[in-house]
Image (cartoon, rainbow, N blue to C red; front, side, top):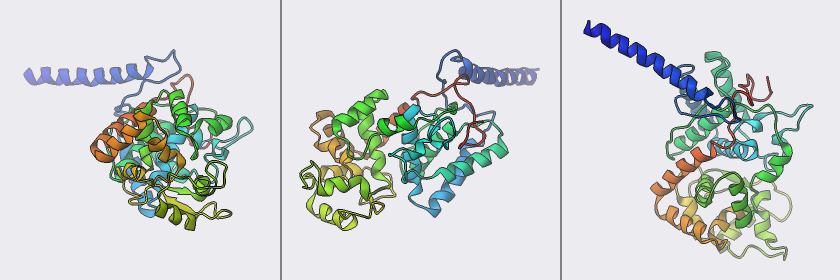
Length: 337
């Protein structure tokens, strides 16, 4: 009798958990935004993260730059219409693709990795895992596989049915941004100085093209002179990679010491005038006390950086997440259903 009672309790708990999961996913049904939680696919696709990780491990093993590229893809998605996988859409008769916008054209990469993950998920869990959630899991796992922190990824996003080429051209921070421009763009997303500095720390992995930092080398302030904040030897090294004309696609590490390892050396470089992009270095040289102090703190304490980065990634991942009324689960991440 006791075992029967225990079994009944377990059955009730099981169905209660299903009811709670369903309630959480629909409690905001009348609004525009989804309620997210890490266990969203616990019953509908428990293998989701395992599938994402297996494809990602293979992709990064083939191309060490891929971790940084996929992390960047997530940033560029969230800053346009929110985290809705709009960046993955190819253009059609109704809209122009965000892939063609200036911040993404000839530089956004990793789309084929997302395609492979989506194909595998559709085979195992048809019409269940959104492309927006795939991007969120890929970003976390790319950081983790590069030696960075782990965080629970809230899930339950839906995919947008439209892209916004024009907004992609103005909402994504550019490589030559001033500190005030960066703060304004982040504030528009509901992100504060600690989010700006910690998320910029994602540049501890990856590369940037010559066209992104040429201005600093040859004409920083419209006077045909280099950026005075550049460390001298670093400056000469960059000139050998990036000439005044041509070589737009020549690349240089964003973190010259450890471009494939997620650590806090990016912030140490900023202290020494070795930030590659203007948008990197101004975090320390832009005369904003809060960002300067954060750069120093993260340079001194990697654990503190990891902790804040994880918090800020979750916060960014909540920007304008769509529910069932506004979004869908695409069968193919490149096209609407």
